[in-house]
Each structure stands twice: as C-alpha cells, then as structure tokens.
Amino acid sequence: MSSKATAQPLSLKIASGAFLAFWCVLAAFPIFWIAVMSVKSPRDAFAASAWDVITGPVTQAAGNGLSVLDIVIGLAFLVYAVRWAFTGLPKLIAHLSPPAWIVLGWLVGAAVYAVVFVLLFFGLLPIILGAVNAIAGPLGTPILGLTTEHYVAVWGENAFYENFINSMIVTAGVVTVSLTVGTLAGYGLARSGSNLAFWLLILALIFRALPHSVLVAGYLPWFINSAEILRPIFGELSPTLYGQPWAVIAVLVAINQPFTIWMLRSFFQNIPSELDEAARVDGCSHFQAFRRVIMPVMWPGVITTGLFSFLLGYNDFLVTSLLLDAQNQTMVPAIAGYFNRETTTTDQVEAVAAAVSITAPLFLLVMVFQRQIVSGLTAGAVKG
Image (cartoon, rainbow, N blue to C red; front, side, top):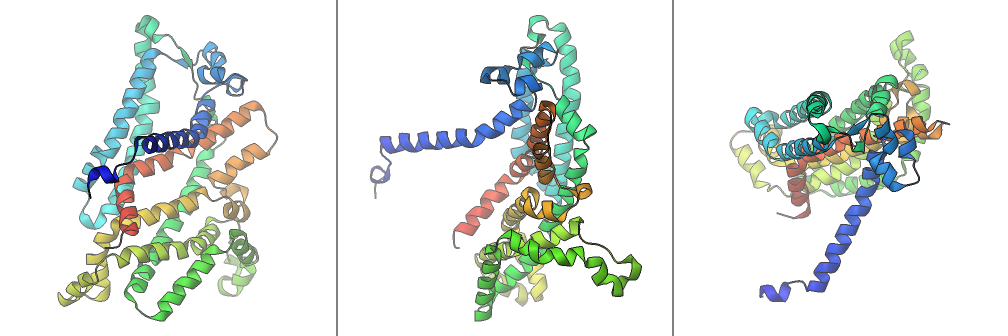
C-alpha cells in the first residue's frame, strides 16, 4: 500500500495538532500558575490582574526580582541541566554501575543529581549572578518580581522536610514490597498454565477494584488495638501500629499488589520461555534462571511498574490522612492541612509553595527514567 493512501489529510493533521496543543496548555497551566504564585508576595500572588501576578510589581518593589542576565543565564542553566539528565546522566550511570546493580545505580544517580542541581541552582548560581548584576548596569536591574522566601519558610520554619522524609519512607516501602512480591508472583503466574493461576488473577482484579475506604475501614480497628493484640507476644513492649508509616505501607501494598502482579505478569509473558529452558539446561535452578537470565531482560518492565507504585504511595491522601498522626504525616495530607485551616494570604502562598515542591521529585523521576519507562510501556503493550 502506498504512503499516499495512508497519509493523513491536511485538515486532520491541523485538527489533531490543535487539539494536542490545547490539551498540553490545559494540562500544564495549573502547574505553571501555582509555580508563578509561589515566588510572589501575597499581594502579587492574589492580584486581580494576571499580568501583575506574572510580573510581580510589589515583589519587585521590595527588592526581590530577576534581571535580564538572571533570566538568560538561569534558562541556559536549566536547558543544559535537563539535556544532561536525558543524555549524560544515563551514560554515566551505565558506565559506573555493574550490570547486577543497575537499578541501585539509577536510584543513587538520580539522588546525587538532584542534590547537585539544588546546590548549584539555588546556592551557587544566585551568588554568582548577584556579583555579575552589581557590575552589569541596566542589564542587572530587576525586571521581574521573584522571591524564594515562601520556600524558605515552608522547608525551614514549618519543617516541611519532616513530611518529605515520611513520604519517602512510605513510598520506598510500598515500592520495595510491591516489586519484590510482584516480580515473584508475576513470574510464577506467567509460567503457570493452570486454571488456578487464572482465578487468582481474577480475584486480584476484584480486590483491586474495591474502594480504598473499604480496606482502610477493615484495617483500622486492628491497627488501633494492635498494642492489646500483640501484648501476649511482646508484653509491655508491644507496638501500636496506628499512626506509624508501617501501617500505611501495609495498606497501600494491599491496594497496589494486584496491579503490580497483573502488570508484571504481562511483561513476563512477553519473554520467551525458551530463555528459562536454556538456563535450566546450563545448570541453573528455577530461581537462578529467574535472577540471572529473566530479570536483566525485565528491568524496563520493573521500572515502569515501580513508577506506578511510586505514584500510588507518593500521591495518596485517603490512607495516609486516616492512618497517620500529625507527627508522621506525609506531604499530601500536610498540604491539605495548609488549605483547610484558617490562614492569612502569606500562609496560603506558603501552601502553594509546598504544593509546587512536591512536583519536583516527579519531574526528576520521569526525566531520569524516561527511556526505561517508554521501553517498558512499549514492551507491555506489544506481544512478542
């Protein structure tokens, strides 16, 4: 069939392109707008004029702003940092990480990259630009109001870093347990041809469809009374699970596990069983074949599934707000608490700054793992 016969008409190309552009603007606008609000004074952030919100005249009048040099050099630094995250960082991680530890290498590499970026962009670059602006004349005069005082207040005065640490504990626990159990169960179900495996998957799907509130209501009495239940075993040292991150991890794993099993099973089905047989012929046991032969091929699927597990634990509100006390609260319920209480406009802008802060790890995660995510989604969508 000729390429002309399958080519899209010009009207369809224009319509699809316009719809895609409109969707991108519609989806990106809220993130852009709260990011702009978070770096303005309260009067500018809630100004009636959209232009005043963007330019920040009150913020600029207070001596907080960006010059032409700040904008040009800052954008150049951001472009280079993003490009290097997509090109240089994967090569460096692949060069320094042993094949058996590639996932750990990615995690360490992403964490180091994030720390170095924050130190350079928010620590060293402002010092350099301040010295350059002092001798640059008109090019060093602020033209756009901007302040980071709300981020300083959120992470310093309000100790938002404690909520960040709690989120990381919950998310790491959910991802670790979900992937460990999911890979083993998904591999076993993919290689099993029995009817029992089919019905286990159906039961897992039904369990996944249950509302989260149902699972929380079932676990809640046990967590609240856990000290009394465990007293015959641990005596006076019996722990109380309610209010602890481990309780949230258990519930979120129960919610997430059916999804990870289904998804990883589909990835394992795309791997020919002849690889298992060849490994067994070479003297490997079932587990050795799984660990040394199958898992190296499965990393894109594991990373893709891990991303969805990460998003579940990172963005959850219902489970974390019901099972965690104020001292162990994660970021999403903590931000909701900002908006729910009676606050001043300054507190509201700080809440917006906190909301912007929690998007940064998500962007970093997608940037670093974008190749594996695309490869994993492609492998899961096409039968080999």
